[in-house]
Length: 433
Ligand code: DCP
Ligand code: MG
Ligand code: MG
Image (cartoon, rainbow, N blue to C red; front, top):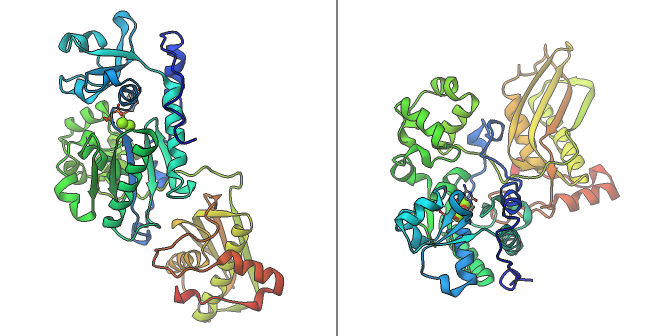
């Protein structure tokens, strides 16, 4: 299965080009992070490391690979019909002449008469990318990979490497595998959030591997033109320059209110991405289940803090078990407390990562509880309730968190024990994690 695309029969005809073009561009893409993907409780987020993989001159490189006569020559791929021809991409040899994506073929041929223009053959590129996706999954399980565009992937390697040095080695192994499988080069960016990883990829192309650590932020990211930021295209870039925002650093230093006024909620997103506060995760497909909850009303009201924490813990444990039972993880927690006087206090937050780990849900609920009126003799607690949202399938049901700071706990196995021998058979010390 590995070498599927090289032996793929490639009809070279202009017919049906439009349909192929549409097929490629209509692939389901996940656009740049939405406001709701950004976690307002950034400090609570687990440190992450992402890889971003982008092929070099993708379509052109594939054509050069498949036809040795084209190697080392200026090649463009795109529509080649008469005056309406357009360059979708150009080989790096063609780029030295200044030829790039979006240029008309007529103009490109004018600056480089030797340019070899080829039609685009979408299905072939799709097969390659899908084949490589399978290859990637030999490194990490599927839920840690995201195909972002026609030639790009994100990989969340946080649970598989301990630091940036290991992440770089990991990235190199992936690059080697891609070369071995498909004989194609790609460039990889490594960083602590998806936006910076995506920017890092462009630092060295072709065949590059660039790491951006938190210490590199001000030196390497802030001086870049604002157009390099994920989601900032030509139009937004122009509007920003009218606001005297030219570099990513300028964006970092501009006022959130002004940005919001000009660009709506995306203004806030741009600024946060610029500052390296992109807490968006690998895009996961949603499940049918929208939310799960568990409430517990006590027979006797309580106010002692240890007893209160104990109740919070029980509800968290129960709810996490409910999630595991359905093989789900949640990204958002709502916590409600009802007092003896029948009044409520409630709060919600993003969980530090998608999880069904009792400890994380418990600790997050305690964070929310800090903002409530604290139960006391005159205001005892009567009911505890939690609801989790943003549910996704937990394909990582064997606790793959090998290198995280938390101790590994085989929650799924413990659930089975509890099911068989009853609730009291085992209890883990949640504070110890
Ligand atoms: N593409 C397209 N239309 C665009 C941009 C790109 O059809 N407006 C196609 C052609 C590219 C492929 O998508 O080969 C990947 O796009 P990239 O932006 O990653 O560009 P390349 O891979 O070609 O070059 P680079 O080495 O800069 O990544
Ligand atoms: Mg590319
Ligand atoms: Mg790309």
